[in-house]
Image (cartoon, rainbow, N blue to C red):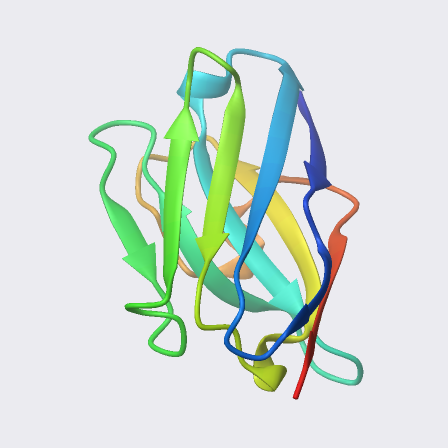
Length: 124
């Protein structure tokens, strides 16, 4: 098993930037494909980005391509999400997730482990 703890959320103006972090503990971080998801009030949880455990390949939702960058530091057991050019529609609780498979899939149900989430609020 792996335990995940997110941090870095907060209140930011539209056009600003934030960097989210997710620290993993427990089983070896490098053995997991990692993802970021988000959930806005009244909406379903949606995929944001993921990075493979095998070749480091990445996947992004169309809504964040060119603005968000996912990265991982296996030596620090940490996953990051750099978010630039933030928009009000990016407001949500952001969750870190882990899966054993190698594909950086967008499918929520493919991820077995989840953090508690961190709130991101973008004011317009």
